[in-house]
Image (tube, rainbow, N blue to C red; front, side, top):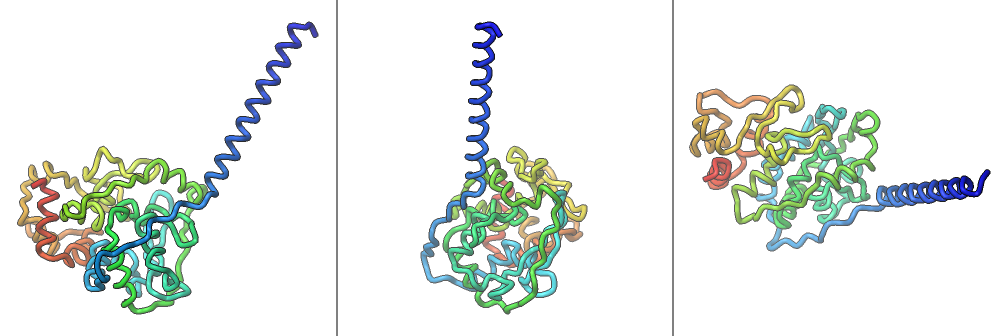
Length: 295
């Protein structure tokens, strides 16, 4: 081998070794990042003594009853089909074996607002922690107080039925990095706070990308790919107004589930009105209507 060719070859080998070492380091760092436990949420500090009555309303308005009830109230077992597989809601009664009776208030806050279990594993975003992340400490404390009063159920939890690779929870860390944004509405803006966080309207009324994340640029623009062939209409303010909706129509819809033409809502919206918005005060329903109409 000539001298020049030898130098080129040795240089190429050195570059290859450096590239291999760089790839090895990247793999190590990536692996450490994946297995590194998530950062815990801040400690809950309620401004007043937790109010269980308010908490029961929030549990209904937030969809907890509707999603976590199949046979026994709040005992889970409800199936939700999706493009990623079948999800089953868990038991959230105070049963210490099947439910969340062994949790603390801060465990509950971490799960609801950050989508992280007390053990440090990630919840799938089928649970709308991406919306709940904006809920106040007081509302979380009120919900926790209400959960203490629920009947205890030992109904067993059902494991999610997800194909590979969606059954690999570590991948959720990358999903969260890409799509979990800590955007909070001022709770003093009551209508916006209810719509964006408590009622999480965007979860159904906003289309999703191929990875199951909401498309921010199409906020409230409707979604025709909900589970069980359901669809949610476009509820952007200009669309509602163009379709003749006024505040009185929305307030009546939220209270009774009736549309302006005298028909009633169908699909999953039945649960939203019957168990969610109907539980709100008339004042909250009015503020919610004004927010959706952009008033």
